[in-house]
Length: 501
Ligand code: ADP
Image (cartoon, rainbow, N blue to C red; front, side):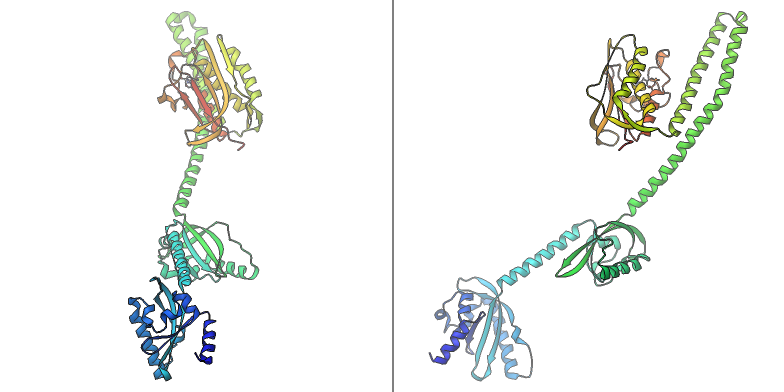
């Protein structure tokens, strides 16, 4: 080899790109070190071979066409096609494996020599592929998300719009991408949005970033709707972008409005009912007292002419008047329970039950009554007199509706599922007895005013208001009450008191 050629070969071997040289018919004349690395051949294995050795059959035609294009442009010289950038091809290495390659060739017209530069782009292709599949992956995720996702840049221009956003706003992604996100909002949110972005530009102040808020959106058909918007910031290739999460809350808002109006109506009708109960019972009392007094006069002044049957009937009238008066008083009291403000304080339930039991139990019982409190009860925020009344009613019922020789009443606190809400409650108070029990079909009824299950036994049993008061008191303490029982198996009244929570 001549010195000049040797020098040239040394230079070429030190070049990072693969380099080869062929004559016009494709015979390889030169192959540098990097090319041997790329294709896996030793120099002597390729020199003298045809360049087609390095290409799979499927690429031969592409190479020939490329060579032709370059030759024409080189010989013609008139066109300035930029072949320097090269083309991507699939090449074949010594092991028979294909790999992606970037190839740039030029033709020296003077002596029909083809010079080629090659670069193995497997890694780059791999990276491109993984980025592509990553982006596709992200896009698939975005499209399966139920919330609308909108990506915008610092100027408010939309870059991404997922499937949920399409169905919320009625626009296809292609109709909004590249346009300003303001098109999705009515005034004054449009102008506000501009000033948000301006403000962010100048002060860096992120007013709504990370904070969800309710605003009004505008659909393609012009209809406005309430939506919840959360905005997060992200950096994509060094640029600040914002991702807005959008949720259409029309249905929730409509439900909230409906619930609000139901609550208002209920409050009005409740207070009207309380008023009615108060007025009605107040007015009822006067004629009732007149009736009772007249029966008394009859009894006192005309006892002689009335005889046995007459006197018995008058006694019955007086008994019924007294009973009626109790009922009217109960109604009055019930309406007061609903209207009066509670005097709330921190109360030690152990002390409260001690004093209730002291007042309630001795009178109630001629038989043995055992009150059991398995563990100390907590302090609760409540209206003390009302909660005393609550326990008084439950304890006296536990004694009244109990035929056991040894009457047992257990008072405690436990955690259990509240059947009204299906929620596990941590603090459920209960009063449990070993009494006559209650049939399941009456579990709701017993809390109704004047509802009694054992009416035959007038003298012992009450007026059917105790549990109604209990329920009202529980409800005034934001709690709920329910009973568990079986006939002959005792009853357990459970309730929550939630004023302090
Ligand atoms: P009353 O004045 O009749 O006691 P309540 O409202 O306290 O009224 O109770 C309503 C009905 O529920 C009672 O008539 C009774 O039949 C039933 N009841 C209440 N507590 C118990 C209990 N611990 N065991 C069995 N039945 C009960």
